[in-house]
Amino acid sequence: MLVAALFPQSYALGLPASSNSLATPRRAGRALLCAAPGGDDILRSLHTTADAAEEQQRRLHRAALAAPASSSSSDGDSPEVHLVGVGPGDVELLTVKALRLMQAADLVLYDRLISPEILSLVSPSAAMLYVGKESGLHTRPQEQIHELLLQFAQSGRTVVRLKGGDPTVFGRGGEEMEYLEAQGVRVRIVPGVTAAAGIAADLGVPLTHRDFADAVHFLTGHAKSGCTTPLGERYEWAKLADPRATLVVYMGLATLPELAPALIAAGLPADTPAMAVQDGTTASQRVVAAGVGDLADAVAAAELKSPTLIFVGSVVSLLNKRDDAAAFGDALTEIKTRAAPVRVLTADGAQALLASVGAREGAADERDSRVEVM
Ligand code: SAH
Image (cartoon, rainbow, N blue to C red; front, side, top):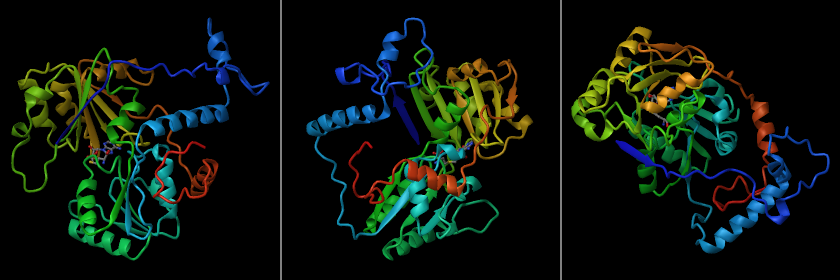
């Protein structure tokens, strides 16, 4: 599977617009930032969050007049399952929506890659069911997971299926959705921060950069069971061996020794920067960086374990610009710790967070999907 994303070459400058209503800070005595040389205009255009929300609301309404309204409302009685992504591990990468559903759930089905800190935020009254797949351990077959989801949804319970990262990126979210929808169950997808985005951000490596990469490819190093085609024959390597693209390989630890030679044979220079990251965004994160030609040996020497994500591309050279990283040498760099400490949100903290984002009336009703700025 291949997902290619091309990004436009222009970037908007994220400064507040200096329209009349925004030009002057309204609240006297507001703590201003230190003035940068020539930054007076910027400081004058600062305004309160309430002003920003109001202005944004007006913009959205203008856009809503131009676009037809979303047709996501339902009759309110049909069974539903929420497929919820929880990000790569760092509890602070949860979305507010994921957290709210975790706290509202009656039944939660969860996978292997979900960290204990995240699971501890699920409502204590919810029934939890582990449905991960691990070699050597007896777990439920996928068909049984489908049936459980169906039965619970039909009983009118709030069913939340938690998945690591984003539920639709190599997470079988699509398969569960197809099955449930064929049985008349409405499926709501809550996106999560996929491992590629979360880990790259944590390490200060941009996935695209106008000087380095115009595209990102996400691919899996692991085929559907039953597929016997060797990795070397599964992809069009000539397309993937693009020095102007970033390649991110999920589930690629076992097939890395085949992947790197396939890329090099297709023309990618062997010294193209690459890195493998185990347990990304968590306290046990480990990073091994090397030229793509040396990465498999470096990973074996460091004995990296699953889950590990592999990045190949010149954006990885930006890793050495980070204070916490040793110089990117010809051979191997290993960084054992995260730049930022892992923060754990307690269940009480989660409640407080939900309260602070304003559990507006009707927010629990997923059927109202129109954008509202508070
Ligand atoms: N849906 C998930 C991916 C599931 S496939 C997502 O969007 O991120 C599982 C693979 O994802 C793992 O084998 C590994 O390659 C990668 N992965 C997920 N979380 C990771 C983490 N915290 N650190 C390193 N790799 C991770």
